View 1: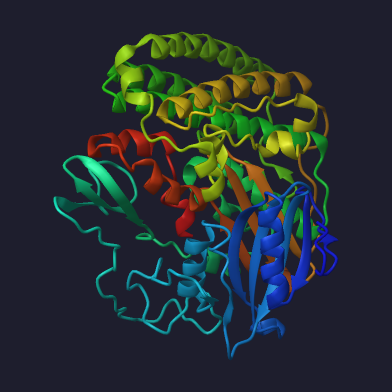
View 2: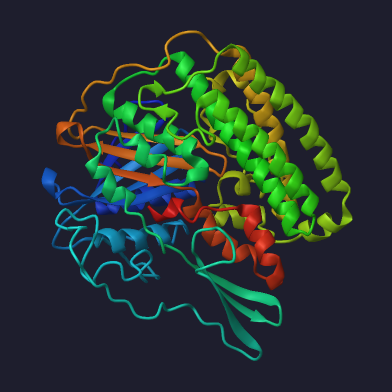
Length: 514
């Protein structure tokens, strides 16, 4: 990426199309402004304690541009751990900056919202879990006052608190509705109740072994996280993956997308009182997961992608069975799509519910499936196709309406495309090795991974430390970008439609809570 007045970006090694530059505070702001003005997006923002390397702290920002990823690194002094705010240019930066403040004590100077985001009294004021001196085993009693939700006042306005514990087997999240009657004026979320400390835990792993931790950031996206981590690790280790392993990785990624779309399509029908859909799609999903278990040795394909290649292969009968099942699922799913389209009760609930216009989606940085259903035609499989996607001509599903109906329609189209891709990958799968031996990591080596998961873009960055260990790794879920958009999507709708609208995004509580 060429930006006047900035240092020359150098190309990072690896599969992800990424450049890197170290910047000053003024250049940090100028880079953000230039990316914003050119239509680029903020992918991730995170910090690091690099005092063991003699560099105090760093704050990083990864941007999506027309050329790929551009990663900037700003060194932050220990005596003034602050950096220029980005939330005025990129709305998703707000919560990422609040997380960096909670975890590292790095403050975004000039930010409008500086409330805690992840702390939840799990550690004390003045303690920062990602600083080198933090002892996670020490006994502590955190302190926390009431969370300062934004209040909406006026005649007839009242609040409905929902969560963090819900009437279902899901992770915790708090939703504070401000309503008049049943109409929602404002929704504010508070997440971070089950902070897992994954970013800190990475420091206990070698670069080779860290894939197991990355794959557990959000279990429904374990393949996408595994591949993004492997891309970053392979860039750090300077290794090239065999062609067969690349094709198998794509097969695993499409299999994960199929499983999640089948589950969501059934759940969305059920949320609109069409219980038959849930039963039917649950059966199809179970058939697919069992086939994945037989083919890859794990229903969710966890730990199948590893640095250097894959830990599973498909042969003979299993290969044919997957292709045959994909054809059967497509036939039944197409019949269900016709039923959905003709079911007036479903369409009454879906159409105009939870609408996010293309302009709003662009302004708020909506990504992934939900973004494509609001006219944002971005998909890494087509925009920056790694092998084998560069040979498969991925068809990107988009729709401009931005409502629940559009998100359902995009799910169907992506399901059919993934089923096609599975068959194409199985037909074109090259022979050869599926894994290579890994060398030792060079201390200070930096790499990134960027993969289009079923929900959206999964990003991983790794810096190697001494003795092959990880100095700092950061895993980023697309839900960071999309959760704030849900707050806007519900405005003007009625409270009973929130479960349906929320499910149509189906964001992860776990992924942004690393």
